[in-house]
Image 1 (cartoon, protein in one colour):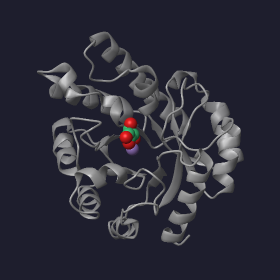
Image 2 (cartoon, rainbow, N blue to C red; image 1 turned 135 degrees about the horizontal axis):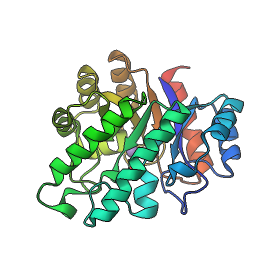
Image 3 (cartoon, rainbow, N blue to C red; image 1 turned 90 degrees about the horizontal axis):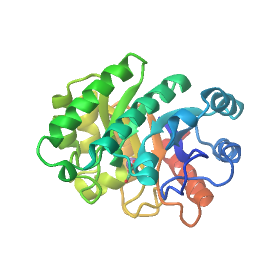
Length: 273
Ligand code: LER
Ligand code: MN
């Protein structure tokens, strides 16, 4: 298992509350490498503005991999969501999703993540679920042709109204029925919606659908600062053969650098590497 930090790219017009590390992009990457991360997860709002060549050069300079290209900054900073009351905004979000996939392909990143960027069923009403199924199936076809996968995040009930937990996630994936689609489990959301620390990870791994993991304690502080049983979760991931990334995506408290450092120190001690 590899450790990554979620960071926002320079063009995002406002601070993303769960993005880590301070400074310029290069300073962020230097700190990530210095403090022992294997990679970064890029939160971008304008994927077409990110130059993949200079990004790859910088990453290579610091020996970092890309864990994922994330969509959260698009909904947060621009209000674009795949499901939206305004069909024009939905269309813009869809175009952005294809740009995220293009960027992931250009960077050889394994996946694109979709959390709050999906929007809400309640905003659209009748037909919304089928609409999302169709959007994701078509995006899956586009992604697969570019060797990119899409990880749909199980989001807590206060942030989403479709796929709140792993059972709903696996059922939704059956509807989408495309191999490029899988699940992202975020320990912060698991804490709110699930009844076991280990079962969600075990079940999704058994289904071959655990594409990605986000880390944050129950209070969204670094792992080890709250109540979540991270040793049990890491053991379950190990037993299930998970060899992907664990990305820290948590509140920048007391500041974005300390939160990143504390996460890496604690998680390295758990992983024993
Ligand atoms: C938001 O709570 C979250 O976990 C992100 O990964 C999705 O936008
Ligand atoms: Mn998350």
